[in-house]
Image (cartoon, rainbow, N blue to C red; front, side, top):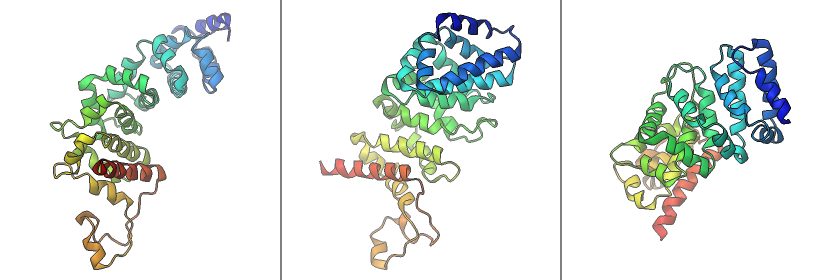
Length: 284
């Protein structure tokens, strides 16, 4: 896309443009954003379009708004252009965070997915964490523990977003702050059946926290008692002898025959990795 075409598209994306023309121009951009080459083009030759795309998420037409959000999700899915996105759209992070935290925003799921994408890589994850501040992290944790926070959005990718933030030491430090009781609030969601994505994000967050070896005694102690929450999803309904049963933690004894083991292989892997981190630290 050469600069001339970029300028032509911009003329069709103004608030005064007819909705049908605006939709056609946006459909072309949406198609571009679906390929790696197209995304890179939008962040170079089409960089002037990027702030306009964010403005279109406030358009009067719901169809235009939805397409604009789809473009944003597609663009943020490509880690190669993350820095270019943040440079070309300086208001991107605060705008997405504001809409994610708005309990009345019907497009909060798009904002959540885009933020989750942006926080996958360490450098832009640090930018997301910096935009949040302490109050913002507190708010995200409140949202995770309140499934009805936004009645119009599922916010499936909220816990994966928090998981991404805990890849950084600063994110883990916040989660492991003993005065906030955050870890304890997350524990019930390790066996939530409502969503594999949400459950995986919580387990990933706990796994990341296990990299902080100095907090192991607290995590395993009576204040948190994390180990049963890691082991229980891995247990099935197998029969054990009385002698074998006595060797198990109380929470894993006499489980019903229909007890199902965690079905998702990625979540099982993260649970096992968490336990291995405890074992590795104990062996040092």
